[in-house]
Image 1: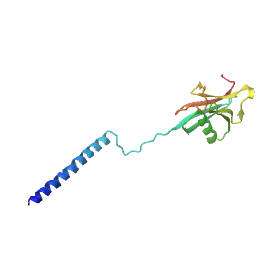
Image 2: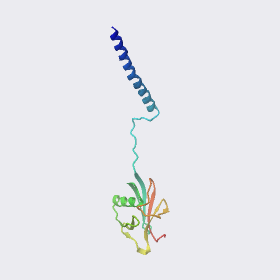
Image 3: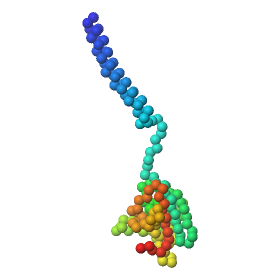
Amino acid sequence: MLFRISVKKSFLKNIILVLIPLLVLIIVGINLVNIGAITTELVEVKSDETLTTLLIDYGNNNIDTYQVKVQNATVFSVLLQASIDYDFNIGSKYYDQYQCHYIYSINNTTEGENNKFWQYYLNDDYGIIGADLQPVHHNDCIEWKFQEPKI
């Protein structure tokens, strides 16, 4: 009879050791749901994808406008993606010493005509570094202008 009592106390002790942490987890879980830390709704995962507006000003009152989505965006990568998405060509040459591309032609409009060259502006600011090196952020506006040199 003494053996049965000790088994019951041990069994009761094990149940208590399991139930108390389980109750604590349930209470904490309910509170996390209530404050919104745990949810069953789908969460939008942020990516490096950038949506930008690209304007190409040919210097003759002809301006093309494009919406471009690209990951890890630079001024150059936006232009390159637009040329793929909207089927126009770009001419560029890569210079190792500057680690960037020089754009000499966009959509069959090539530098040197009337002493004009392709130059970019980012959010209305003249681009002073290479197009490959200039990062672009969501909702930025890039404008490539065919014009006489600014520098």
